[in-house]
Image 1 (tube, rainbow, N blue to C red):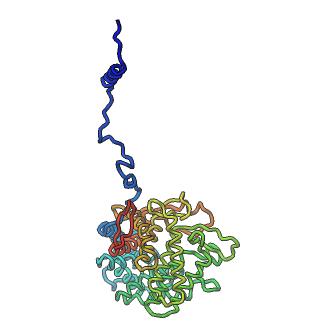
Image 2: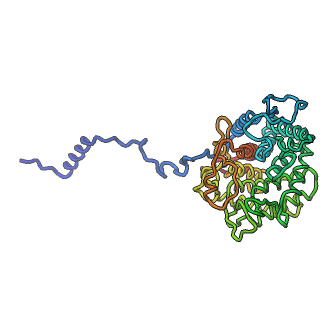
Length: 457
């Protein structure tokens, strides 16, 4: 006779068998899956490719310090006889074979003009005189050597001298950046012996450099009547600084004219970016928005506004142009904090020197009240965090595009090499670090609802 199971008994037997045969893990409170009820998902920490948040003053100073140590060793402030390689310890030992001691970088190049300006600025913002001394020692060395070769009667010897570009500048590259740095040092009460060379550089920019008929600074390469965006930086800061040094309005007028006339021809209002080159005789003007050239333009405009009297008739126009450019650049910043070699083509590589220039110029514009600090400070801090990752333990700056001419095809810009000894990266990194120090010193930042924000007290 079979035992009859009533429904409740059958259910009980099923439960017992199920419990006995189940061998999987039991779910505990600790295994409760994270969801929007158990934990606010919007507060989960993202896996950022670059440090997200404000840097500390100590970390910024450490980055600047590594660059300084490398450059101080790589570009010694010494002279030697090129035949014997003997170091010259006294200016009385100078002779026609005197050159700068062997180093990795050229002390009279425009790139080093930017580096001198960067070291001067770092000296101010860190309070450490070693940075100022770097520029003072080398610029005075250049002046002493130029004094010697200027007195030589043999033309060929002067032409072959290591300061030929100082005595006889032949391009804006020779004159503008190093002149601006000399004026900045001179305005600090240092380097009175620099004034003859300041005047020589300014004379070249004002009267000897080729210009279009309307006075726009130009070159005759690679085609006649060509504008290079780079030349805004190779001229405007020096002219602006000379206006500040002398009080003569004509220098400000020329600087403002260059910004306006370059922008009229080369600024794409829809993108908020400049093209790299413009040729007068072309009916069509190909637009390649090369990053570093845009950096030179941005920095030139900021440095002009830095000293341009507010009552100057061109001040509002230049200030508006700055804001248009910053707005355009901000739209193209990569999630890493960098900008691309061709700004509007995100399959081109991420480039360090341009990113450092934008960091400096935008931070400077914020600190001087030229642009909205609430809107742009987070992007600037992200950019600095990106740049700092490219300063290696030796103090070398990685990821910098080498010197670049002008082209009208994409392959040229996409495939420009990068090199750790490309001099263009060092000055901008120092300038950027110094200006970031000022930004974080005078402003508070916070993570608000997981995003970096300027904190309003």
